[in-house]
Length: 247
Image (tube, rainbow, N blue to C red; front, top):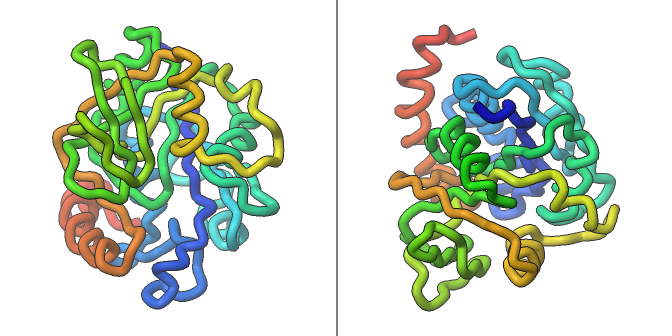
């Protein structure tokens, strides 16, 4: 069994498109059936055996810190604070300075995929990969398109546009080796999807795909936020959280 990695949750989004629905709160704190969306992610990683989470926060970060504190649901929480927007890649570089493990599970703080994250960790280690990307069957055009080779290795990646031969979308969940972050500049705005993945592919880094044949539920638009309300209330709150007790 590989060591249990730290988890990085990218939680610094403004939620501009959701302001008319959720008001002036950080997007990961949008309420799903009376609970912050971020709580669902934290409970998910706890159930799957993780113990330490780095929350990469920016906009209204004090709201998140005051709500969760330094421990929640049996998890140790550490905060990596963006003083100004750094993009997904820049935020990841900053959060990487808090890592205590040689690899990290990276998650977007505005989407939920019910994948087997413990198996993702095992496959990442077994494949000796630099990065492993959770992918789902292609169903929409505003997520990262991914082309996999027959060996399961990522051959091409394009953010928010279709590419020839693509059958999959990125679910916004990654296993990533810490040493990939070492050469990135500090305090510079970078996009993980638009800049770093193409750079790593060009540098022949081993990027594997982890196929999950289920949905990725995100809250990025008012329409998808409503879908998330219905789907996640049934999936999470109606089953798992009831069994845990509504604390």
